[in-house]
Length: 411
Image (cartoon, rainbow, N blue to C red; front, side, top):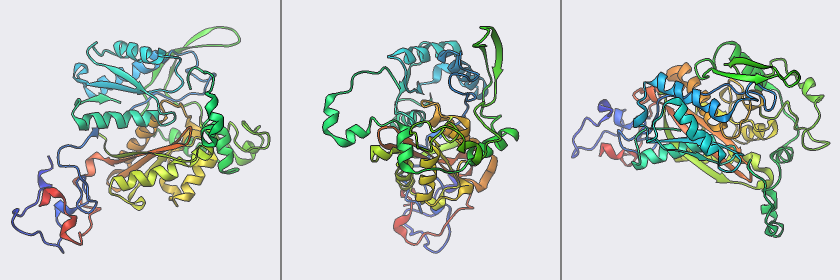
């Protein structure tokens, strides 16, 4: 409970309108933002970690089983937070393209490897590229609902229903995301790799990455080597626009989307929003989802200090930034998926971890952050987070203009 933010006047005395008072500051139950949450019921994130992200099929984890990748992460979470495993109410894992129910089994196995007892349940969630963020949102919602107190937050192909031919928008849901990227715009820059390379070189990812010991098989000799992976291996530090221009388009013969410009407590959860958009240009999802999530949090775009927007493709990322008129200095400051990678099931969680660690590094001048990504078949998701250790600061406070804007706790 934030005692010093409680009103200092009696319930029968009208609060002063012109004076700046703590109960009307821009804290979590902000009067100025007309929040609806009561004191003490905030859902908070106490830790955010990930493994390194590696190239598909030829990166450091190409021979690593999914359960062997998840288990070290869960184990490290227990060790770093002094978490009591049997107090966890649920483990939710974002995952995409699992064969049948295999991934759910692998996640359950990983929980046992990590030291969680059989009494702790686990489940997977799939909302394409936003699966990791959806896992965070599901956990937050379940905690809010009182289901539990603590949680850790492309498939088998089948014939397509012929009904799809009757509905043009349903047909658009089958368009590969690379093609929808071409539909959004032609070509943009290489800043993602430069930012990510600089961030990695300065050690900014060190505190969020859990090293994983694994084996890798040499495809030529068949020799198995034991290695420990603690760095993302998809970053191209020397990428240039002229170099990208030489790469072969990946989806259209005359297209611009290539391997180079495609994707390779901390805080409180303030809001989460999922929206629908035209499936033919699903990359624009963040441009619609971000305003919705920000409004739900009682904020404005200008109040957001940092954005972490998934760079599924260069074109859709730049379109969304331009559409929302975002300050480039606030967006993906440590690079994005074009450099780090875009593992579909994990991207949302990776973005959350990267954002929250950067907010922590920046301190009191960085209070609100947004995560967003486009979703296949024409959707977008976004969430707003508030840095946990700045809710008591008055540095962002505003004067209220009328009594009806006061928090219900102040009445």
